[in-house]
Image (cartoon, rainbow, N blue to C red; front, side, top):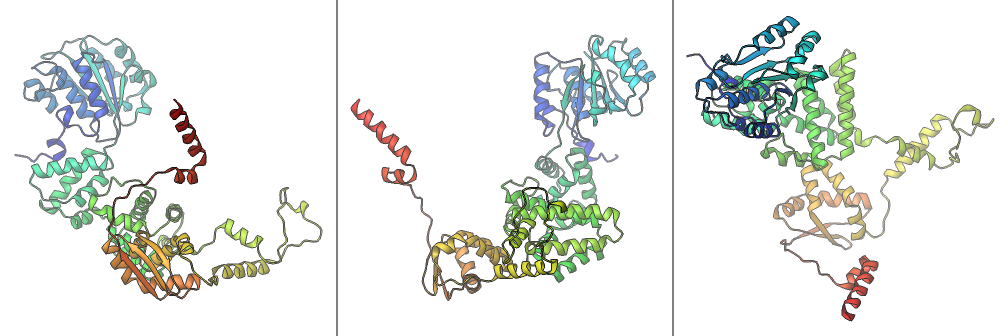
Length: 538
């Protein structure tokens, strides 16, 4: 017996089996149960999301021998014939190969014949947007006043190519791309039924490659099963699709944040020497940075398995939002430059090195501010446009080498640690984020833990803090000497000892009283006082 591919074997046979299109199935079920079925439908949406399957299920619901029902039996003669595409009363037409007006006229001639064994005669026209304009016009009158018990169901991936006069005569339903987690859920069910061993990470790769189409996902799953022999692993799936692993992108981002130029280029050259596609590498890196950016702005990742969520969060903690946006912008520009450039590898090398120096670059606004504040610069901005006619005869403009020297001097002065006689805990708390950013460049994992401790006091040589987690305390204790060095260099202090006390978390309740309220909101406190007075008098 010939093998049945998964896309056909597990094609939805009931409304309940159609994934991620609940907004459509609910309406159709209610229409069937309330006997309010329309004469024409237009199913629009991406490929492989269930348009034709939904049309067949609707046809079975109307022509099931058990009776019209939103839950067809799928075992009667009519249901089986519709499922197999052999029913005389449910005609499926390929719009791409039947585009002329003569094809539509042949269809209209067929309308005069009653259904053979069913209640309705149903015409399913796939890729209806391929019909010619004259063919569409020939359909108009038929759609407006079709024969009794005749229903048209049109399916298309490009609804904008369908004549508005056709759309206005149909009930239109827009199918949406199927989310990654819904595809993964379906693949898990099929893997259990087929007794195939797999892991969640592999299924997420397949779901992402399917780009929102369930049919594509099942076809890819078939391909993976053939390669892996019923034992699907993450590494094998990566090999099949030529996908670069997350570990590579983590290492690339580590090289970038630590300005490890040599290691950065070595890792990139490894990709090139392995014969990997450069565009695949850039797309993968952009997608990885996109995920980091989403985490930074508080959006939960739905296209990543739960086991990898923590990893992405830790990597994201090493970067600022603006920096990640800048990286994506640079990579987008690189992709455009590669289209017109001849040496794509060199262009990529330069861009990666620029990304690793992004934190050292000075923004235009900051540079202008430094020039304005430079010693001896008495220039005041003009209120009029800066064109040559508005400059005085004797220009006060400094030669460009002098300006460059002043800017460099100003930048160097701003980078020098400012002397401070006494470092207070208040000052350190206020600037703690700056300390964390420096620490992350040495160890971004430990650096991220610094956000979880609370500074309590500073003496001449001792910094004291508290932590409510044993792991946090252990990691920062190990990092203690480097942390003190960072603080001493930044604030010209002389800290030698770091003491972290472990404090168990306890639920606290905020005590409310009038004195606290007066400090925070005197107007509200006065209002409550007057209200209490009125209540007492009453």
